[in-house]
Length: 165
Image 1 (cartoon, rainbow, N blue to C red):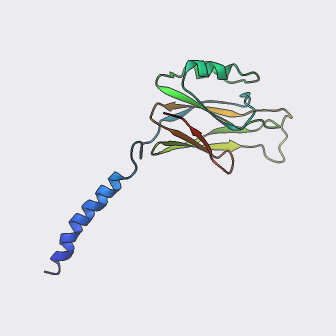
Image 2: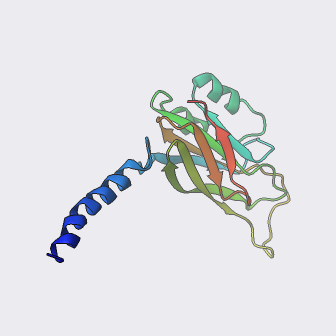
Image 3: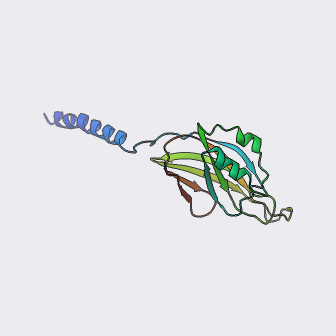
């Protein structure tokens, strides 16, 4: 009889644990976001470090009209903004050549899209051109109901952007 008591509790306990695990998270939890790097550039023309979210053609044209940028605009314009939005991550102005930024990974947590970026800097003893650059990466994100964007890897503190979906 004492053997049966643990067995009687084992099945309901296992069922409760499985149910609890599947009930956490909510919408977009556990969903692998579809993010791809479209291009990157050493001269985006954006002076401050930050993140921009582009959903419409007019927003895209305003961004591409910024003076001093040298991005591959043809490939950026090929992104179908009805199916994807663009996220531009910039390091801001840097004093020399040799800096770059790129997508390392993308994850999702409920309504937040999290982008981990990899920043490359010139080695301290490296000879580099003394020219002001503004490195950035342009990412395409499959449409979803993300309400917030969190970008890490650029500094000690993640950049947060409310998307307002």
